[in-house]
Image (cartoon, rainbow over all chains, first blue to last red; front, side, top):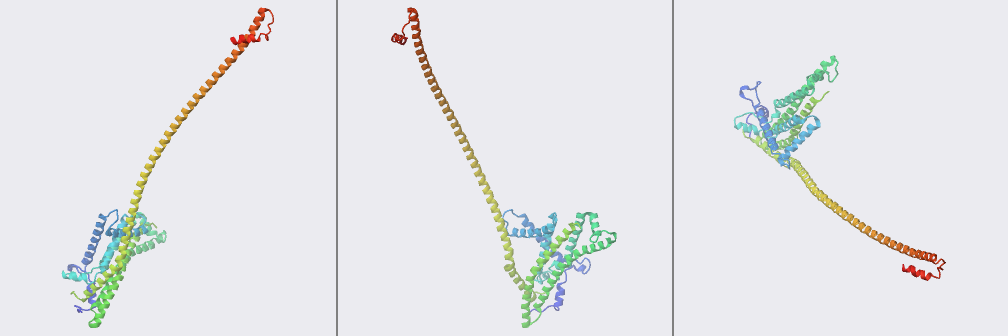
Length: 272
Length: 156
């Protein structure tokens, strides 16, 4: 049993929870989380390449396995959009597909051994590396704020500036001038809650999942001798069980993020 | 961070996780994919079959139309033949009837002429008697000279 090189479990976890940032900007506004950006970009490009290649080689005849899989994913997402949104799906469909597959892929990074990528990057002299972009609140907020911008955009597009303002000030209580301020305040809260809940839900689930993986990983170096080996075995079992359970969580979280995106944007189209 | 037992433990767990996915998750996805392939293949086959059936039905319909047209023309030919036959027959019958009527009319004419001739002969007899009686100024007993008169009349 290799002993912990520095400190205990707390330091191990703290080490893991630190993002990769350029040394010049540590802690400041320009502290770009290079790890999140890199992993999410790589996965996004992978997703695009994968689906693009399958779409390019798509045949109208009996599809190959790869095409059939892509079709199943596409049909599933399109079905979800169709259920909720009854307008032109040319923008919302691809948006939902992108959100679903991208978030799923980023979540799936959680299934990789929590020490694997940091260990590899360390060989190249890079210290902190967090593999799961969706466990980075910046990443989830980036996505939810984009969705928020789309909500605002489609609210204006569907109702016009006047119609949207009218709705903000007169719904839900009524159009009496005295009610304008309460209406507006309530609508602001409702509006703001959407990106916050969207981002926090995904971040919370992924962050907690990652943390549990780290805690279980702590068992691998928890003791020496027979007790240590017992804990090591327990660690392997626990890590595996949590991993299997996590397959469910990452799928559900990707699904929820997609469905809520669809719901929010289709709500922006609805008139009150 | 060094390569240590933590990473080894995680890799073992990851291997088990992959094994689990291969055995318990992938089969479901694979089944969905294969079901879809089968469904699409069946749909395409059915469409092709329907297409072929439509084609063969078209051919059959064309053949049947041709046959019907042929039959119709045969029927028309036969009808024309029959009409010709009927006309021929009617003409023959009419000619026969005409000939028959002509013959009977000629018979009638002949018998009437004969009768007229006979009557004339009788009247000639009577006239001769009258003339003769006038000439001899006495009654010629027709009955006594009947044989003579008849002989005379027959000689006319």
